Image (cartoon, rainbow, N blue to C red):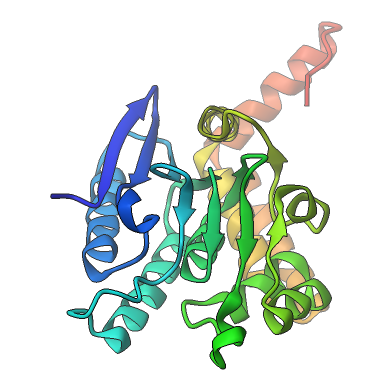
Length: 251
């Protein structure tokens, strides 16, 4: 039985973690099923995908009761999954419907963007067991919310609610119908140029790891590349024509 289900809402794929009896905890089957789902989405005409959880949890983290799992293998596979999410050619939005702890929080961080239910909570409690996050949290969280907020969460292990997550920039919005909100957000973004989206993501991801002068140079190179594409040239001509006819272009 699959641990990840898939449905389509228009041109947006919705993936749901389906291990509610264990709060959608991560075992090897779930990692494998997520990779298989990404294979299908990549080969499909879906323009983006949403990731959410079944029941009252988004994902409770690694399944500590999965005795047949190889934890070292699962860590390697989760790192590979995180890299795949981060370089995936289609936008991803985590619809955090409830509890997101440990590896479940890290899984949400794999996504391009995150929206949250008002009842959701986020935490990396590993330090309370004399451990540390091992699925990418120590590297992803500072990139998302900055060093200060990240260290506070990592070193205390304390959970935060959706309001605090929004305040520190971890999530984009809070909505009662979190899946619908995530689908709507993915739909708005995916209506834009796919090449422009991918180039913006590349600029942000690669530029954040460069010195500022090098990052500016990367931005300049990517801007020139985009401006030379037929899609951008046609859009610019349309924009100028609209201005000439007295119509203002909506941003």
